Length: 478
Ligand SMILES: Nc1nc2c(ncn2[C@@H]2O[C@H](COP(=O)(O)OP(=O)(O)O)[C@@H](O)[C@H]2O)c(=O)[nH]1
Ligand SMILES: [Mg+2]
Image (cartoon, rainbow, N blue to C red):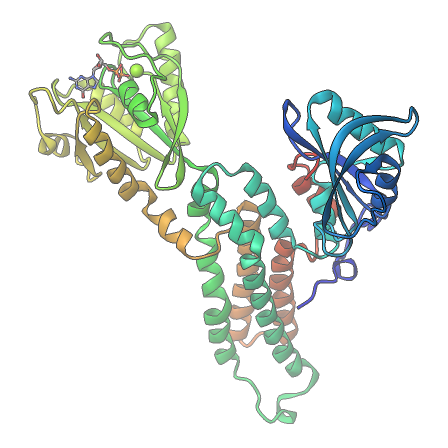
């Protein structure tokens, strides 16, 4: 299927859309470094560099997709600004499907700024954030889900999130969506045949109950399965927020340091040392884990400590997973009970720390006291081999689902999830109408809604406000 977005998009001005002006931006981070790149896209890209670039080889004919060595010249002062490499990529086989020129100069604030100024003086306009990718979308080279994958790739901090974004950029989601969309279209034409011709004129009138059941197996079930993977996808994309809680002195800060492999939090034998929430991160099984160490929860804290405890409780509320630490060398106390209250209904596991010291109770005592079924691990966070064991335990407890989900190729982001849910609702309404022998026009209308929600994900139908909100998340130069 080909996308002729310009014809299909229902709203929004096409002005900005695929305007024929030439844009430019610095494409690399500003700062001192080996190379900095100024990117130009649009019909004036080549004329602009012809004025600014002095090739080192005479008779340079600017063949497409080649790199040229030479000098950047300031035409007003007729002086050389920097030694550069210039690449020219002729439309349509480029990122934006327009002519693109990239000037590779040295990377320093002064030189990049001067190069950009020279390009602007020759008639280019400064690009808005994400405008290069927006042009790639508007030209139909990528769909909206692929454009979103570009942001995910730039932001990605772990192997799994990168792999996920990479699959989306290659168009896995797009292909799946296109096939669902076509399947809805087929249902629609079948239904519409019944609107146009009465049943007795058709050789093979479709049975509404049969259509309803086919709608479930072909569309409602696979779409629902897909939407249900959102939570796992969020963990893969953004990381898992893991909160350490427990009464004072159980070893929370020692555990944070052991997990991230550096002395980030202060550890002392004195209770009440950690007062604020301390956050750091590490990678577990290819997934980013954001770990938060909190103030020990106890009954009669001083003023600062109680502010810390307040923060600890808030962190637990929006944690993806909680590690509840218990010191097995000291008897269980009402302070542990207070932690149990705080952990509440969150997803947690219990760590019985300080296994190296004589134990004052066992796992059974915990299960008896709190009547919990959460997984329990006994360890000493000061032993390296126990930390290794803990990593396996945490993967099993919290990452199994995201890891298996990542095997299958597609996982929605929040915007996709909302569109999927609306699409599924419409499909369910169509199904109920079919079962109750309802009006065929209404069935067709609901199918149309279901289809347009999938088209929103691809960006076949969307307004400029949505595009603005997506592309503004990009950096300038992408
Ligand atoms: N023997 C022993 N001491 C530990 C262990 N874990 C932590 N500690 C000690 O317990 C004290 C409190 O540790 P800390 O990490 O500050 O606890 P927090 O208050 O929960 O953050 C420190 O003196 C640690 O060295 C352990 O597994 N075994
Ligand atoms: Mg601490």
